[in-house]
Length: 423
Image (cartoon, rainbow, N blue to C red; front, side, top):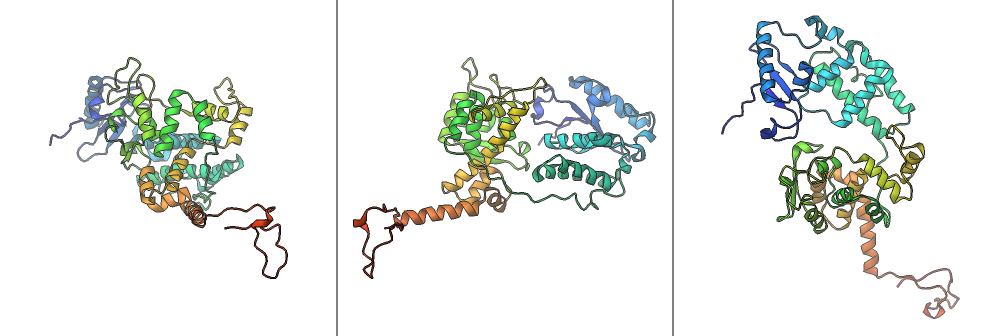
């Protein structure tokens, strides 16, 4: 098998290797001289501008390798090697290095969490080795004071723990300030169990535009996460076999899966597989992209508008493109997130009699116990068992005022008119 030669250049994105020369994502440089330290960084960051051309990126990489071998290479903005030592490295500088050298792109959730950490009381400007356990505990106390739910605080715990664990592992810190913290642990929180009310699905589809309609139906039919749907391309959809492939690099758990396509979803995909000119989309086009198959980055605004309209409210926005106070209150009262559609999909499959391990595969869970807890499968199973018991009995209530249907009491007394009979 031929071995790919990247010559120290690569891209950290979901695009195929053959598309790297034309995709818009930045190049990354990687070089380790014999007996020396590794150098890994973004070509754009070091060059101070976006380098789209592979030829230009290769030329820069050659010059950097030569400077590294000669011992004269200095990172952009570094006056001397001392400026890059852990003793004077700020938390913000370290977080940037962490994002570059982690080996995979940071998730949007981790980026957002770290951004808030760095901004809190200008924590990002402090020296990395000066950050104390008390500083971090004070930050998390501020999250509680701001009213963040335990589930939201757990996301910050995960992001901060990963950051400082990596710092300790790589030698930037002698001790992990998170490890000794008593209050920086993931908290147990009430399990969310939001289900769609009667008629709510119809109201959502009626309030959504064509693009969001397709995404809502796909979420309810597959249980896929929002990011999995938005990154799905037509090469991963086989309508003849009624299957779609969720690739590992696009999942939260980094584990791929092949799932079946329902008749309802197949009908939606059949209508969406051609562009405005009537030509079928190519294999690299995005299934839930825009009208010409380009990827849609986010559907938050469309979803929030849809939820408000479905619950009889109009969405109003501020000049900064944020929901107004009144609209945020109405959205909170509706209490419906896009992730709730995933929960609804899994619950429907269980209620339809699907084995729990099959539901776990559809949702992309690592094990059945995770699915059982996520969907509260015990409660669903108990409800289904009671329903089948009632059906086996043939239960029905007898009207209280029909005296002829009441058998006489054994002692010859009158029957209790408040007691319905079950046949």
